[in-house]
Length: 271
Image (cartoon, rainbow, N blue to C red; front, side, top):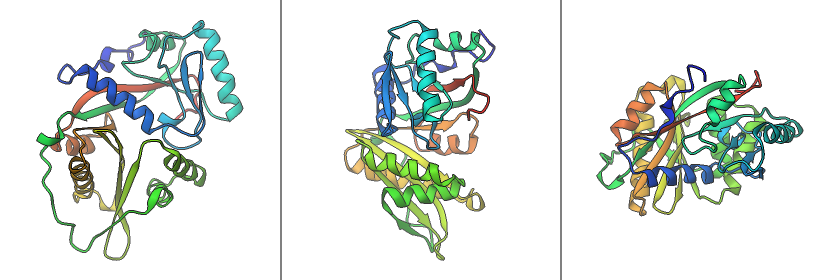
C-alpha cells in the first residue's frame, strides 16, 4: 500500500450513509455518457469529453472474474476507443481494497476530489440577491452551454461536442445558465442536474479575469433557490480537494464534505 492510499475516502460521519449512497448514485446518473457498458460487473464509460466521470471505470459491483483478467478485458475496450484506462476510486468501490490493489500494481493516483453535500436545502443560508449591476442571465440550452463553458476552459472542439452530446442525451434533466456582462462578455456559468428531490451543482466556472467578484456564489445561490422552490430537499457537488476558494463558497452556502474520491491509472498520459 502506498502512502497515498489512505482512508481519506471514508464517508463523513456527519451525514447519513443512505444519503451519501444516493448522492453517489445521482452523480453516476447525471454523468452518464451515451457510450457505456458493463464489463465483469463494472461500469465502463467511454466519452471523449473532458469530465473524467464520463470516461472512466466505476467499480459498482463485486467483479465477476479475477482482477488481472478483468483489467485486461477493460483495457482492450479503452484501447479500441482510443482512451486511457482510468479507474475511479470511491468509498463505494468493489472490492473495498481496490485502491490498495491498484496501488500495489503501480497505478498512479491523481485528482483528489471532494463530494460536498447540503443535506437540508431548507435550512441552507441562501439569500436571494439582485442580478449584479449591468449583468444579464442567459439560458442557452445544452449545446450553447457546453460551448460556453468549453470556451471558458479552453477545451478542444471534440470535448465541447462530447459535453453537449452527453447533456442532450441525459436521462437526468439539466438546466444551465450563463452570467454575462453589459457588453455580452461571458463572466461565469453553472448548471444543475435534478433527480427527484436531489439536485447536483455542475460546471461552476468563472472567467479568470472576473474571479473574486462573487459571480460563482451568485449563480450557485440562484440555481439552488430555484431547485428548492421546485421541491429539492438536498444538494451535492464535486470539487477539487485543493480548490480552497471554491470550497469556501460552497461551505458558506451550507455544504460540508460527504466523501472523497480519486482516480488511478497506469497510463502516464491519463489526466
